[in-house]
Length: 234
Image 1 (cartoon, rainbow, N blue to C red):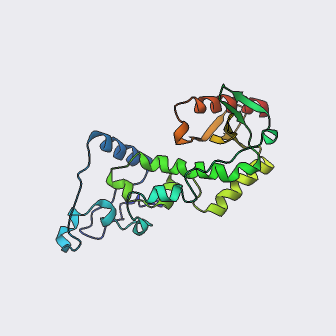
Image 2 (cartoon, helix red, strand yellow):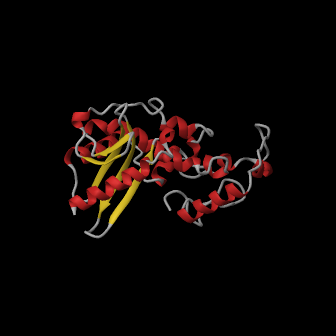
Image 3 (cartoon, rainbow, N blue to C red):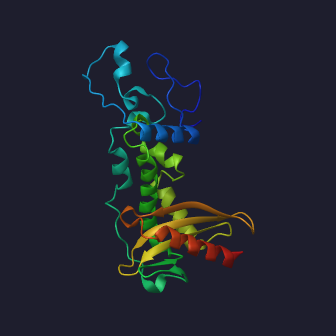
């Protein structure tokens, strides 16, 4: 509802209703995008009131934060606002117990020094959600703040760093965060955020692998480590 999922929300011209931003609609839009390629619209800068339907959705829609949508690359610029996924080496002596291991990677509970690196992957996590609809009009109808909120990622950088740091520094009885570290470089290549609600249920809240290292078994390795950590705690 916060992002326009209301029958009372209409666009500037003709009372047309924007697409809802709830999960079922997100899946529907994704299916439509897969089924057909949206038409590329080109039009003059000035247009009459009756020609509004020719405009792309992201130009017609006047929803929350949509006026800050500036084009298809705005999400990428937000996700990599510092630099393209900076590598931060985690010293071996600061890595706690190894929860899972393969030939190239290990899964550990990271130290607080890993906060900045995990935040970069967190922003890329929101970018992954947006890219599911790349090429669909809805992709340009939402601002980075909305995509971040949609995927459950904090928008404010200071708040996000504080949440991650406190979790790594102080720990929690109800949640944990583990990461996958590349042996050769000591860099974090993915993270898994876990939640514990009772002795029988393990919640896999967020699972993210750096794009360049996907399809290499890192997610499965982190799941193995997450299950082991959960059994130790409960």
